[in-house]
Each structure stands twice: as structure tokens, then as C-alpha cells.
Length: 621
Image 1 (cartoon, rainbow, N blue to C red):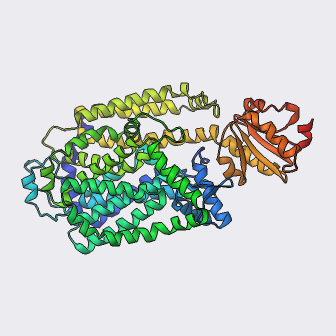
Image 2 (cartoon, rainbow, N blue to C red; image 1 turned 45 degrees about the vertical axis):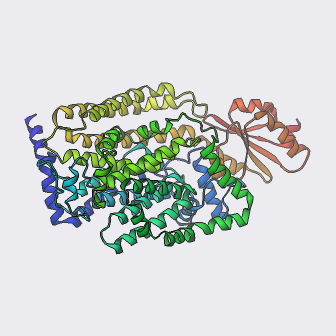
Image 3 (tube, rainbow, N blue to C red; image 1 turned 180 degrees about the vertical axis):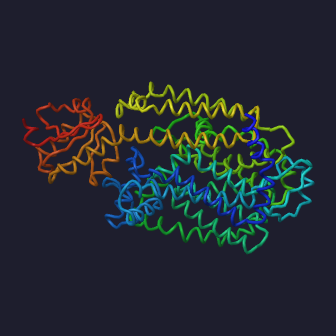
């Protein structure tokens, strides 16, 4: 025990940080290379490892993947199509990037997910760069002291003035390590960074544009300032091509809120050169909107602007009705384990002391800017009628910056009692609760008809037990560090959550894929091999878009099984439009079609589904 205590004393942040500051001063490029290496290692483990080893996840991911594949087949890079119909849900940037990946690496799951993984990596680097240069925040320091500091102070290794003689500022490269780690190591980034959706691309474009704005805002040199503002406009234009009007509306609201608070809006607006910036956005983003409107007319305008933008905000679509506090819960769950520190991080900034913040130099405003970013996104989608889990993904970089600065300030005051005690206690308690839920989860996972044996498979794998032990061990470690070395709790979270994602979540995803998606891929392969000329593939009871991607053909979906028999009679008996049908359905759904067993031939079974063939001859019989 004495030896362990001696090791912790040697590794105590109070000892390490001065040594790290000296190393940073002497070898900044070495520290920078170390940060890049750290981010690449985390990204390799959490974003790129096994990226293509699971099938596309129904019901949304295949829609993007197949629309992009259609572009490579038809050569039409203006109008997206899925299953023979136009798909105006999202603008084309994600489709273009996926299509480029298909052309480069082939049509597969890895290529479909590569743009999301690269987007998460780029956003992480951008966040780390911003924290490196402007991560220090005055926090609770006396405003007069900070005002006496150089108003254009950057994040040089010198210390900031403080009313506390015991203050030992954390080097900003260490803040960059904290922020980038938290940005990658959470369920939000892990989930959406490994999925072929447009959400992570939007988060990267929007988050990158906001960070570029702040990097320009805080720059002391006009030339550097204008370069970053140019990046801001370009990335905002890409955000419009990734998701639509929200790509410009949200950054605009965030920046306006921030500038109104610090009361220097007119000065910054002149610096931004809005006319030049507006032209940049128009030149990059508008041409596709013009071309797709010319090609499709009101069909595009009504579907994209009317339904997928205006109606999603003003009314509930696709049955995404949730309580008003839905996104608050999603943020707390998705950003675990770091989300338990968000209240303390917000309180630390004392946002109601407006005059104090207005006296700070611009280089000290990153925390306040991140707070504006966080609240505007959260409130915007809380007000929106349609609520989807991924909507608040763009606030994750702001949350990571807020919590990184909180930990940094806590580490910088070795002589004071940690302000994070209650958050750290909650941290331990939440992990205990998650361990219990995970241990019990196999009992609750056998209700999905598409994967009725999932709970059993997970129980047999031992992963819920392993995950519970990891979470419980992390919770107990945090509890012990609360009594011993509080400033190492961040590291305990890092190691515990990294082990949990790598040793438990990764293997769980493979099991879920085997139970839920693999049967559909197997039947799709059989259907492709067995398909005859003029045969049509039907799916009854469910709409699984992955069938379209894996069969690379059109699939007709029937939610009501009772309509299948009439459809087959019209297409095969009353006309010569079809020579037969390949039907994928669950046995119960097949019974509800009204077809008797002697009217179809079973070709294969996989998981909860079976594949059968119906011909005109069998239908007559």
C-alpha cells in the first residue's frame, strides 16, 4: 500500500503539471505530436476498429447508404433516390462523400460509415486545437486581475493572474487532451461516429464552423482572424449541404446570443464582413438547391423545405413524439460519464455576472461561447415538436469544452478542496446504477420479434456480467479516489469507459448484428441468387431498407399482410407484370397474407424470417 501511495505521489497532478509546463515550453512540437497521436489512438480504437464488421442498421442507415449507391449507378448526383423513389430527406453532401468512398474502396458497410468516422475525427482535432490555444478560462478569478492581463493574450505557457496565490494553471495542451478524450469517449460520438448517417457530418461541419468563428474572434492578428472567418463561412456552407437550413440557423443563433451577451456585436459583425461571407455560403451551398429544384420542381420544395424542415419543427412527424424534457435526458445519457459534471461546469462560469465577462479579453471567452452553444442547441430542439435522439449531437463539442475547463480549473488549485465532490459522488452512483441495469438487461431483451433470442445470446456470452463488473469496478475506484486522490477520478473514468466500450459494447454490437441484421443479409443473398426474370421481392409486416441495399434491387413493402394476396393476383393472374414473387416475412405475418402453405415454396429460413416463392401456378392452385 505504501508503494502504491508513493507512486500516486510521484504522479500527483501537483507535481506533474509544472513538469509538463516546462516540457511544453521547451518542446511544444513534441507535445503537439503527442496530442495528435493520442487522438489517433482513441479514434482508431473507438471509431475505426471493426467499423465495417456489422451490417447496416435498419431502419435509417440503409436509406443513406443505398441513396449514395444509386448515385454511383445512375450517375445522377443531383437527385437522391431510394428504392425507385426520390429521397429529399437530406441534402446531398453525405451521399456524395459515401459515393466517393464507394468509388474508392468499394460498395460496403465500411465505405458507407467512413464519412461519419472521419467527421468525428476532424471535429475532435478542431476542438483540441481550440482548447490548446484558448482553453484557459478565468472562471472565478477576479475580473480586475484578468482585465489587467494583455487583452490579446493567447495560451502561452505563462500563468494568468489570479486572486489566489495557490493557483497553478493547467497547461492548455492538457486541456486539449481532456477535451478531445471526452469528445470521443462517449456514447454520442461512439454511436453516430460509427453509423452511416448525416448527423455526425452535420455536427462536424456545424461544430467546425463555430470553432472557426471563435478562433477568428479571439485572434489578435487581423490576417489570422480573417482566415479563420473564411473557414467559418466555408464550413457553415457545408453544414447547409449536410442538413439544410439548420446548418446556418443554429450557428447564427449561437453567435448572436454570444455577441449580445458580451456586448461587442457591431464590432464583430464588421470584422465578419457579412456580405463577403454570405456570397461564399451562396456560392458553395445554393447551386445544388437550384439544380435539384429545376430537376424536380415543387416535389422537392414541398418535401424538403415543407415536410423535412418546417413540419419537423412545428409538428410531430414519423411518430417522434416525446416529452419536452426528452433531449435533456438524452444529453445526460449520451454524454456519460462526463455529463454528470455539466451542472458544475455551467455554475463555474457564473453566467449571470455579465459585466465581469464583458471585462475579460476575447481570448478568455471560450467557456462562455461553449455555454451559449450548448444552451441554444438544447433549447432549440427542446422547443421543436419532433424529437429525435441525434438532434442534440451538435452540442457535444461544447459540452466537452465546458467539462474540460472545469477539470482544468479544479486541477489548477491544489491548495483548495475540490469543488467537484458532489459531481464525483454522483459519477460513482450513476455507474453503479448502470451496472445494475446492464446486469438485468438480458431479461428485458426478448420482446423484439425481430431478435427474440437476443437476451439469451447476451446472457450466454457473459458480456452483461463483464460490463457490470467493469462499471462497478470503476464506480468503486472513484469512491476510493474520493477519499484518497480526487484529481485522478478523471483517469478512472477514462480507463473504465474505454474498457467498457472496447470489451463489452463492441462484442455486444456483433451479437446484436447476428441476431437482428444478419438473417436479413442471408435471405437477401439467397433472394439475389434465386431471383428469376420479372420476379419481385416483397417484404411483409416490416420495412427493412437494408434489403434494398443488399439485393441492389427494388423491394415492395407491405405493412398490412392482408393486402399481399390481392396484389399478387393483380400482378400475376390478371396481368403478366410478374412471373413470381419472393416474399420475406415472419411466419405469423405470412399466415396473415391469406396464402396457404401449398401456394408457396419455402426457399430459406434465417433468424425470425423465412423466404418463400409464389408463382402464378402455385397461386392458382
